[in-house]
Image (tube, rainbow, N blue to C red; front, side, top):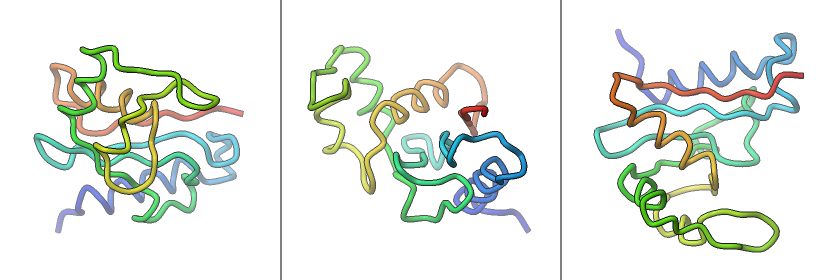
Length: 121
């Protein structure tokens, strides 16, 4: 029996976030997986890899995020640089820059279906 992309993403995140592995500072880092030809799931900002659950993931649409790069539609918002209209295109928690990064990686001309980014101690 095969696992769903959601359960596999959660398992991967938990393994990368395990304290004894020392792969992630304070549970930081991101994981993502392709869900369909048009969408992917990514760990939301503020979620912890080791304890990540479904509410800590955001489903994003490739086309909307990739259009940000084409339009260079990044504006100054508060204290950080991020796409101001990103909230209109994602469901769930905020993902900011990591959503665009993972969108780019998951649409490279290869068969990439999983992306991880961790911050070593």
